[in-house]
Image (cartoon, rainbow, N blue to C red):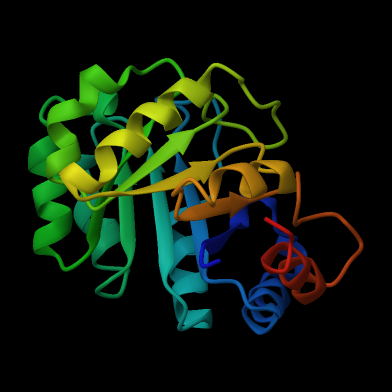
Length: 220
């Protein structure tokens, strides 16, 4: 079964970031997930533009950039200019007055446009945007912090999106509290990719390649 695995780099060891990127790349990670927070849209600061630039230079793998910032249209060029064509940029629709304009700027820069949907955001609120994005990142925890517990009511959101994805032409990605059980349940249903953080990948005293191999070879 084919599905993508992305490393949540806010969980990496920043004292050895170059080694972390190399180990993940050699272990078979598909892309690097970059969480950018501004302390306003979410009450936390995570990775910076310079972190993104460092990782972009350190690997040829795609980057998956999740902007948890207010009004990303004001700074979107800083991010797109630092990326390679074909990288992904997600915005939160609630953070923008006119999210479709920002998504168009992302697409015009050669990036893959996506939206991130919070646990409390209904599908109806973003339904029209589903036709103009390639990827939908579904938050199974509230954005802003790692190591949170899965919110069970988000299952309904996944079910709704799985019914719409083929008609509207987008792929679904899982972000937050992603354990092996979630991959086993939702990869066969059509969720295309999973962001891996402290629940499954980081801080396990186990080589990344071994963990990624075990995930890809689980029984479904």
